[in-house]
Length: 196
Image (tube, rainbow, N blue to C red; front, side):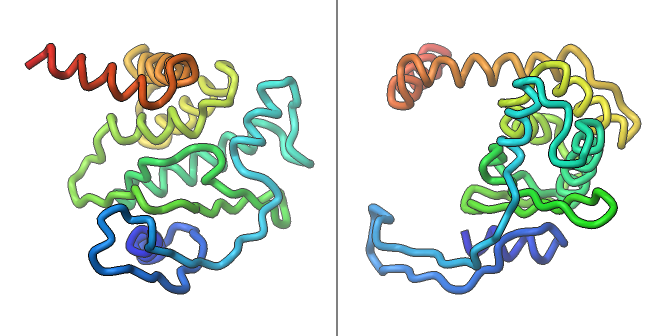
């Protein structure tokens, strides 16, 4: 978490200010290690905003959905342009505040799984892994529009292959809810074993 937050700050991405961490030597269960960061006051998280749009709201505060999509796509484009694969880019980990002239700011929390890379171009599989998580609570019309804007920022289209990643993530979430996380992991291990 400390390293992830420090990388975000180095690369100009908003995150909760790290304060300290405490690491117990020899704690193989990782249950006696602690990370402390600044509390971030936020109006909402992106998951709450996308849920509202999915339920029929056309605005968040004074912001039209289109403004939210554009500014969030810009933020994601900037983050991935800095070679950051967040890996836990769920709606609750993306805090949102509004400022003057309808400007949004985004702050990332829960930074333990983050990975950084130096390769270019940034792989689509990482882009899509982040975006499918962030957009999970958003309706399909919203996903389509957001992803059109996002891919348009680097001169590309949102294709059926990209859409497939969203369908697969939705399926994974449904399966986890049905059989539980442990059941999902057992099933994945079994499938991997059969392939080998």
